[in-house]
Image 1 (cartoon, rainbow, N blue to C red):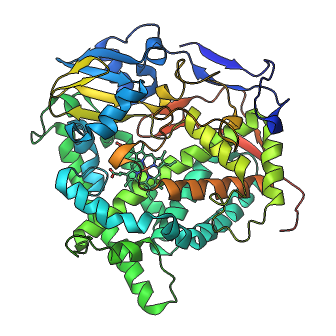
Image 2 (cartoon, rainbow, N blue to C red):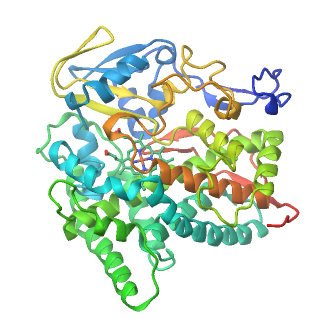
Image 3 (cartoon, protein in one colour):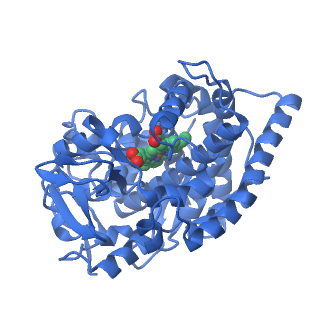
Length: 478
Ligand code: HEM
């Protein structure tokens, strides 16, 4: 596929503080002119789902293709999206493939549970994810960011750094510390190996995962089952180590405490040990690769836009980051936050939200039948020609205070409706804080000749390791 990129056109900005900065269009593959044939489409789902969306998906409000006897819709009409994710959401469930692939690693945690089991979990977990509760976790996040920065500084001193790997470790460290109040030194390597092993083969959707009805085994299910039999004892070991540490060391409240203390508001019931473990797996898995990718793409965009990078660095250098509480919510770092928002527009970590219709519905005039697939793809939606001016250009000004808000249901990096991301506040806190800390300390220069392109399997990642030179900045007080 041809690659589009442009960093030379004249600026046209409505936000005065960014006026005069060059317009940057990060490179991306031009979408295919036509629907891919079925075999190529299924291959794209396995290898890079972004390549499965044809040009007209970026231009039309609703597109439809046939998929093994069913219809598969891509919705970009805000009203249609509202219908599926909010108004009639009870008619739309996780797909068989999603559940089949994720259950062995996530168990019956919040992300894949359905119906009354989901409602019970969501209500029980909600108090642990309020902005106030997240502010309580900020010291853990800050400790992990500080430790992570030292590691990144050591790596940078030795030469160019593969930033996705560095941010991946950082996000895992943050998830570990916020959840268990302990560094990931002891368990981090094994955890990364488990996740990499699963993602490499068992976590990729294959044809049989999609077509075989639930309850019927497919060959990969055996491998997934074997994986789960090793994975559960590993998670139990981490939780037991944390419980042990709690008895012997000073300990300030973390997410595990919040989850263990959580009670269903209707019944007063707490999570059982198995349920607690599944929530822990869900929060670690849902929360680290998504944020790592977001940080990587923010760094990439700012390396392509050095003048913008200097503005963000100046903001971070002027801010007091020694008290990170409320760092992203109290308006202290508006440009850093706008860069994260714009990064989530151009490279949404969760590139698609997929649902299976349980019964018939009418969506934007299209008849949806039971078992049809309905997709809302933030990757497509956020670059849609009808919804965004200059959709492929990197312009954080769209999200600065004073800019007009995006149209409702046109910007959905965290989804929408009852199943909206429960960790959104947590993710934004850690992303804003981490990006500010990196830029306060380093100038980021891309050390690659070829464009780095997005590749979406579970999340939107760089298509290969991309190296950056991290050039130390003059220190400023504090
Ligand atoms: C940049 C980071 C993140 C992005 C882009 C993101 C995106 C999303 C999206 C789009 C959904 C909705 C999926 C759907 O409707 O099918 C979702 C759900 C979810 N996210 Fe996130 N997420 C991020 C970080 C996190 C973090 C840090 C956590 C946990 C601490 C988390 C935990 C979850 C959970 C548990 C769900 C399922 C909610 C439910 O079904 O009720 N996410 N996320």
